[in-house]
Length: 259
Image (cartoon, rainbow, N blue to C red; front, side, top):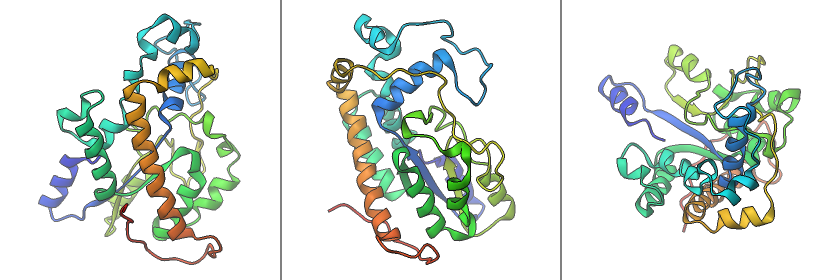
């Protein structure tokens, strides 16, 4: 989501506009992960009692029983987040909101990646913003706590947590500011608690449950945004990284518009 208020304030005081960077996730994976997160928590604060602690109902059972926690409407988050501050963005299954989210992704964001290609996302940042992300890829690869499969990633706090790198950059008043809405618990360069949060217990939904969720309009629209973001990121990744590019080569890229 583009922080309009912050952008306006920066403009008033003659400060440079930030570069917005984000990650999004497959909507079904996110819904299931958040469902179990509310019941079992994660490895970030394992002793914190969550709101649905003690509820043993599985996601499949929730869908069969038509409970609110597994309602497909709960997936309506990444579209309004990228859409912006307009109240219409939060109208569930709004065609206008989806199109606005796509426009913002193209016009307002420096880079939007997907959690399933997190390593490539980190590498693109290191190549395009080497003054800020030098060594980020090596840190990612060598940090044992980052060796998680995409299904274990928990990005439920995507819009609430920011990388502490943002604060450091702003203090240094470098020409380019970067705002990153990632659920990273610390600076990449610090090596302290640099792991991504992982839901403590999670059961994969059945094919029947998946089919029922994917039949909803909300899933189709959230998935459309995800596929759109994936397509854009794939084009950027190919242009920036190439197939045989030396890792030490450094160059900037222009955002690629879809045909």
